[in-house]
Amino acid sequence: MYTTSGRSPTPTATACFSISAYSDPCVLPRVLEVFAKQGLMPDTLHSVTAGEEGEEQHIDLQMRHMSEQQSQHMARALRQIYLVNTVLTSDKQHFVSHKSAAA
Image (cartoon, rainbow, N blue to C red; front, side, top):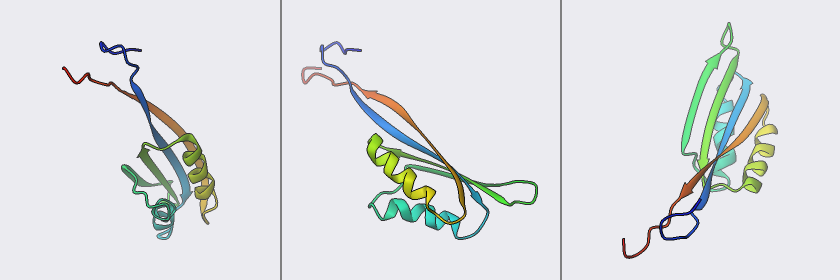
């Protein structure tokens, strides 16, 4: 993919984390602590209580400009949290086009 200036657009990645845990008041702060320890704040956060009796918590996070290596590191840390059952990761690729200075 090329722009009219002939330069390739720069890819940027958004790391997506989907976390399933037992429902407990300490889970969400512990998940956010993993990011805070790295000086990061997720771009989006969505958390819902699920299950017939509210026994599960599903947390979805997105973090822009995160490398695959950083994403893997964060996922490993999230998997170590007490009460977390599953951590799934994926990446969304975005392309930023370079506009010429004359444009």
